[in-house]
Amino acid sequence: MLKELNKNKIMFLMLLPTLIFFLINSYFPMVGIYYAFTSYDFAGGLFGSPFVGLDNFKFLWQSGMLLKLTTNTVGYNLAFIILGNGLAIICAIMLSEIRGKLFKKITQSVMFLPYFISFVLLSVIAYNMFNYESGFVNTVLKRFEAGPVDIYNTPWIWVFLIIIFYLWKNLGYSMVIYLAAITGISDEYYEAARIDGANIFQRIWYITVPMLKPTFVILLLFSLGSIMKGQFDLFYQLIGNNGVLYNATDIIDTYVYRSLKVTFDIGMATAAGLYQSLFGFILIMTVNYIIRKINEDYALF
Image (cartoon, rainbow, N blue to C red; front, side, top):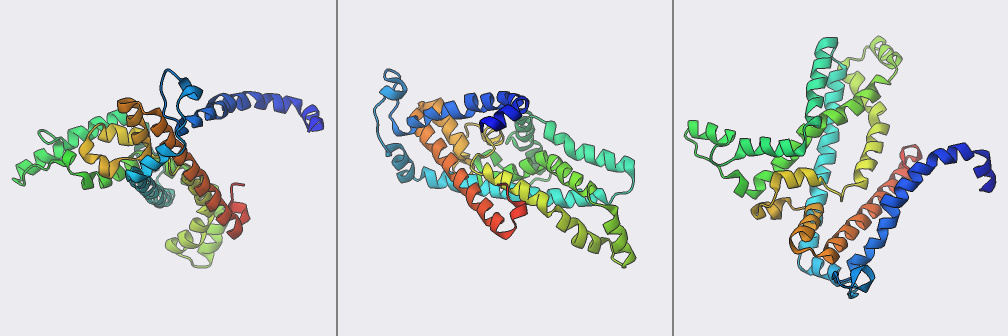
């Protein structure tokens, strides 16, 4: 170790800012995990608060919140991952087959543009579309005498709306990654396929799709690592403090935020956050182990 440090001291010195960053922002704050096992009070502080063991976890489980939050968080993220990657691959392949350079650039820019729209602006767009009194959707329905729909008080609708908004906002970014991978595929494969008489669909299925497999697996592993993290900005900005929609849209991140904002229950919020981290860690280790057994080249480690 000492020989390695002496031999490559300049490289290790360049790594130092990154190590300090993670120590300050990721490792030192892990002391706060202890909050999950306490009933926090300001007089006692971190180590002076009453130790309650697993009572915070027990309350989350018995209240049914833990199961509901886990189901919502994992369910939404699976929809984001499967639909997001699937649509990104389809759009990237379709865009790569466009021959007109100007049209290709315009299409790519238009699809990428929503990624730069803030979640605050996204919530404004959603409100102006689905507002009961003067929203665009209800205004159109009134014109056709179909009657207004109280969308902000209909939980099941938001299951689909949240997924649609997420895909609309992030599709362009994911598509660019797959498009870059397609660009890296040698033209010789396609030329050989054309000579052998393969049509466009056969070239896509037997050349493009298999070549995108490593990129898909890596992005899948990265996504699974944060499957319990959720999309706090998306959910909070669209749903806000609308309690009617909590049952269908509440995820662990929004629950932790409300626990700190409304009741300031630091112990309960930390317990939920710790469960979230452990679940995500176990999931990524398990999936990476399975992928390494199937094909070691595709595994992260």
